[in-house]
Length: 493
Image (cartoon, rainbow, N blue to C red; front, side, top):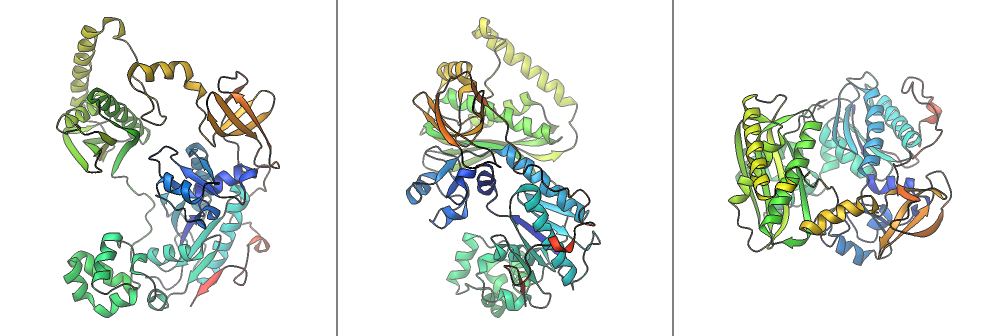
């Protein structure tokens, strides 16, 4: 624990939904839900307007639609979110060499290591400035927590939401934590929380009163000791600049259960190709291939195979995943499939290349024997929602309308009307609202899905012609430092 609150935790507010509202003037102040829009889709993020109606992350989309039937339901635009995230992380990197990203929208920063704060006053000033600059650069708001440990900084940012700042003075940790739910502590999920509840422990003060020995008896030595320390406010984990990924994986949930074994294998091969693409994008290789299968009854099976050495070869991963599938009974139907690679490394074992080449030649020869005219066909690499069509019908659809898919919320450009976004599509029509982040709410028009004047477009920046903050933090005037303690920001004593 530090004597000064120089660990900062930034959490962007309702990140995906806020980015969509910033990009779409007509949605500002209205409920927005981002996630998978199919029958089995789940909510990724809900705006605060939607949250007031009961919608929250990880909720089934069908339930969200019942709670908020008039909300805007949008498909995620990860290209936009990554661009904004890169802008935010670049700003954090100016404060300190020790920035620990947790996801696209949150990170820890060690202000002391960057020499920008060494006491409560300087830490607060940096936090206020950071919020101001993030809004100016990205158009979005973020909440900031400042404390002497990572655990408390994260708790502080959560308490400060939305669009606030909370500083926890060192020495006040136990008083602050005492009335909070045990679920606020890291490592206390639904199962552990329920176990503690049955033992009569629902708030943090109950954990300190119970004592370490009782927690060890209930939860085991490692978890019990750690939980007792955290309940007292102790957390010595450092901010780590490089968080090494332990695995790379992809998965799809299907609109309709898959029963065709050939289709299931084809989906596994497609997922393996996507997984390797991500693996190579990260410049890594992996030693263990993992297959995940969720069946019709929600039972989930995982199978793994460890190779002779790390690889990033798509054929090796594909064939390993296929072998794992052979050991899984999919008779009743498959709801979800996933392929992952663990045991990551920064190199590839050379002898696996020969194994991959041999497997590829054998597969090619077998396919050519069965279908001489299609031996050189390119496998389907679509990224859209799974479960929409099967076999030849799916491939034909891909060939004829790959560019005619119009996901709700995605960007388009029309030769006459300019830039807009898809409000919805169906029965051969697509409805578009034409507006940009810096314009008033725009007009709505409907087109045929194959209108040659309408095409997909890249996301626009959320802020145009903003102020120059290239020399921040050194040159940022204190007059721009955002709301003070009496205007939404807090200090906890």
